Length: 226
Image 1 (cartoon, rainbow, N blue to C red):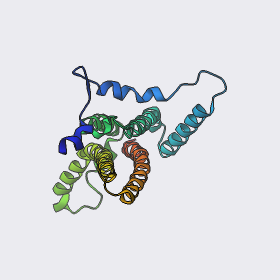
Image 2 (cartoon, helix red, strand yellow):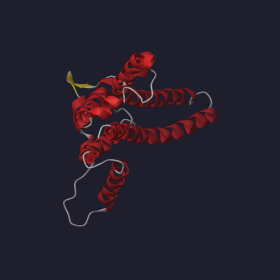
Image 3 (cartoon, rainbow, N blue to C red):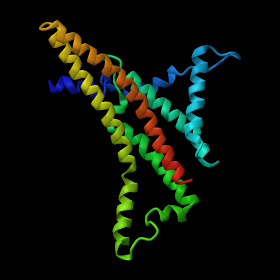
Image 4 (tube, rainbow, N blue to C red):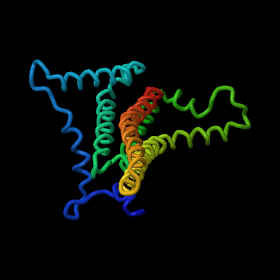
């Protein structure tokens, strides 16, 4: 049971070679590029969503922060398409791997923090010691603020991993229950299957929301350091 339950989270291989790289490179192929003066409805909708998302995230940024717009838009598209593709049967979701999420979170967080120390070092250091702090509490607050800063990329990665993994496990358990009940009690099977459909709709929303939350938090870290 445990092996079947967690089998979908094992990185797939082809002839003994890891196939995760090919799976990660696949989502960008689903975003077609326009080659014509007049676009079709799919590309028009795609461009409208990209402009809407980038406008919403970049409104609070200054000129230096807006140089990250292409990276942030690419990030949210990649995470959203990867999460949605993982909902397909017999597919692999790279965002359930903590190592991959850390590989996305740490460089983006480090880039934002380093930019803050380079451009606004006084404001960056001021975050470690709030104004009006009593003198005896200064060492403790500096340690706490340092830990809270260093834990930000871990929180980003764990949040995305936990939400996507929990949803996949719940869908797997309810799907197994539906299959087991199909030969025992038909009315109960229909009820469980209805719950499974509603959960699938919820997971589609969670896949998109988690992509937005991940990118929005990176954008907020960038805003604090620019």
